Image (cartoon, rainbow, N blue to C red; front, top):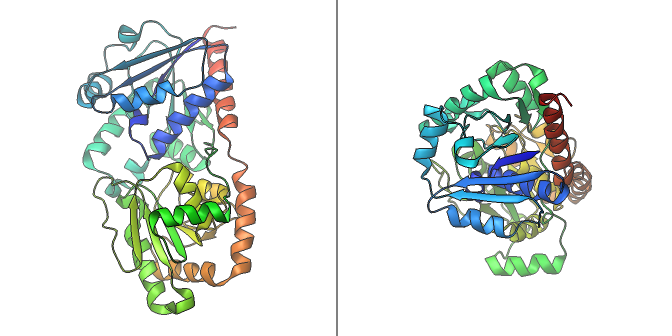
Length: 379
């Protein structure tokens, strides 16, 4: 079987979709030496990012890399708007096509796609108008043509059934995994990274693309309330903000707030390990990779119970109302002041994180590929 994977979204480094595409691709190539693969990507300035990713992949006996200097606007028009010229005209024949979450090209092959979330329907006010237009165009093609939809969570599966009206038989839940970088670190490792970024006090961490859905305004308001109510020398702590700017980025500012921007996963894992807690009151997630990575790094978590976050956090996190800064601020104080609670959540989080493995994710998806191939060819 020849499998085509659209890896174009890897160019958007720091996003959950980029991490998903990169980790799934690398683990499939490591796991499966029987089938052949074609990695397809496009972009202009982003093309070198895709080339660098391809250079660092595991060796594979049957691997093609087809990267094209096409602008995003042209490819979006071809795949989502025109939607008439099959992808085979560019890549030649193949058996299965795993599309990105941005463009759905027409094809005669078996079509698989991953739907990470339906935020453009559930919370359209948190997305840019251009993103909503493109996603809705793509999802119309997915509804008509996809042979299988991979959902990141039970929550996303319910949304796909209820909002897109797709039969549950076409949807399979496969949880994403956690990158190997995210594990508990030593005190010495934490000290080195704290020194690197000039973090001198105890700190909490908030991580995610700086855009409305991640609810940074509420995080900042909650941290400000915590400072006003509980400010004492022994309770003094910083809020470290990590993430690249998204559309309509919330301004990250305030006393005791330190903005680092986008940093490497290697450094992020260490900062998780040294933090008193992650504050992540997201309004909606299709999975919640940030929560999973924090737990794997030994970081206690405060998050919301919306979307899929209860599936990811289980009983290993503190849940708060994402629209109630006072409620979140109380949870911040508990994590800072209650050592037993923090240690208990750390232990529970490490166990909960063991459920999410990229090797397991790739193996489950490969089984679905092969079942679709057998059905198509009546094997």
